[in-house]
Image 1 (spheres, rainbow, N blue to C red):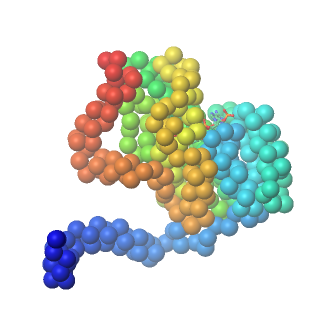
Image 2: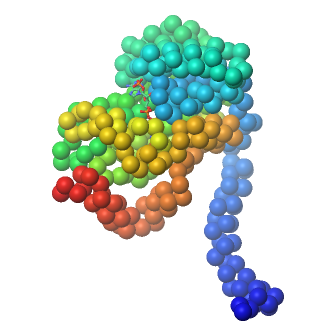
Image 3: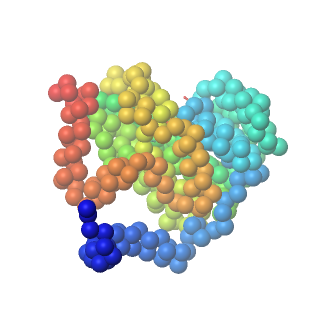
Length: 317
Ligand SMILES: NC(=O)c1ccc[n+]([C@@H]2O[C@H](COP(=O)([O-])OP(=O)(O)OC[C@H]3O[C@@H](n4cnc5c(N)ncnc54)[C@H](OP(=O)(O)O)[C@@H]3O)[C@@H](O)[C@H]2O)c1
């Protein structure tokens, strides 16, 4: 029989308590102390009811799920993307659903890489109105080794994931009040790079840098929620550009095992409502990766190299 006497339990608690208390303290203390620091995290909760929310990349995946989640919370939606038929269907679905919302959702064509589309959107749809929440969500990925990826793919991915979001944010920033919020759908790959996705990882690192700089400029009080998402089961990988610049059109096995778009949307909207500025929407293993990249980079890169060998492009080498 194992010894469960009270002396034994006390002895074990004494022996192991630092291993529990030190990490718990490292997590709790900075969170408590952040209440002393000025910033958007100290604002009252963001209530989406009657707020105007503009979503880019709303036609499919996370953007579409965000539309449902925000519509359910009473938001006035402006849904944008290039697939106008899908946006029209989405608006019909929202209106036909059991959700009660007195604001009719509207949709607009917007290629975020086309400045003229953005000008039209601002002139025709906004006309001095307020955008309370901007969701920078549109995205594009790539697959393939650096040695075979042409500059055109690097440029195209950067156009969508970096320059496109800057263009939209620069144009709409004057319409966003300090009580509002900018949500950015970045990726865990904005914090740690993954082999054979160089353009995508680089573009997500770039967008993290841009918004981290913006939050330290004159609008310091404006909430910017950076979402570092892990895999979501949205079919995003199948649209990634291969080395010929065409969509790979093949489901990504890791992504298929990822979070659902609906669960992800709920987490994102909850985080925005709670005035959070960073959300790592990914399993614990991803957090360990981010931590290891900081603590022991050489070991992290070795692990990622090993991971790359299991990738279809790594196997070919
Ligand atoms: N799925 C994942 O595993 C995962 C993981 C981490 C982060 N993310 C990020 O999550 C975001 C949403 O992706 P998703 O998973 O929901 O994939 P998705 O279903 O493929 O959504 C991508 C959206 O971006 C839009 N888009 C692409 N290029 C555009 C352009 N030039 N202008 C305007 N809209 C454009 C697409 O709409 P149109 O084609 O109709 O324009 C689509 O609505 C992306 O930023 C992605 O990087 C995804």
